[in-house]
Amino acid sequence: MRVDWTALRQELAVWHRDGLRLPFWWRDDDAIAPTKALKQLENLGRNMGVPVHLAIIPANVDQALVEHISDVIVPVVHGWSHQNNAPLGQKKAEFGAGRDLDLVRQELQRGLERMNGVFGARFSKMFVAPWNRLSADVLSILQDVGFTTVSTFQSRTSAQPIAGLEQVNTHIDPIFWRGARGLVEPVTLVSQTVELLEKRRRGILDAAEPLGYLTHHLVHDAEIWEFSRQFLTEICEGPVTLYRHDKKDIS
Image 1: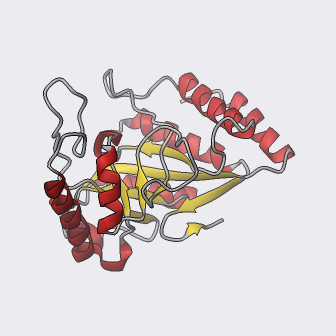
Image 2: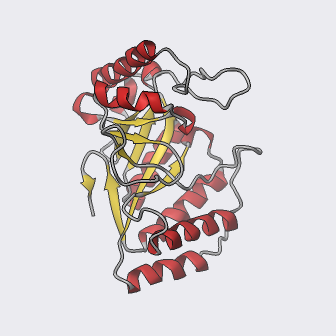
């Protein structure tokens, strides 16, 4: 696959010139059990030297997953069962508006307990909202039950904690979900990334929020894997500080 990275390289060169640092992280969603795709994800993270925050569905997690992931993987919590609870006609969400908050609290507590039972101290108390949607009513419950961080999609609007939670979102998704679930046109992905970096550099967006790359290893085709490899290579050529939730900055 040939991708024109010129615009991204030029923008990163400006960051270098101006002495700026780009915090960067990687999140991958929907893990349950060891698979060939998960091993490929892990190998890519290790080869690139980039930690993978693996969003795991607590209700369905397989104990065998613990034995098949290395230190490049940071286990985080992906909802409870990844079940769509949104009313008919509304966008999918597990923890959207209108749910019984006592039941929500029970599910969030069960999620933490399940992940603790499977991973112990290895899992990180970051809550990744299924479908990247989350009701405002749920935020305070997340903090109450023990989460420290929440993650969805799109740039955060404030660096201040929300309901006591750090917000670390994702911003670039290579999958064309509304189409055949193949790769978004690479020129579009490069353009989106450059625009985000330019807005951060100019103070329009919060430059302190780690720029997040979002993947879903279980549905990747060969083009998505290859684009991801190239993208991570290009980003890491820039003045990057890698974010890892269980250790914060690592380089």
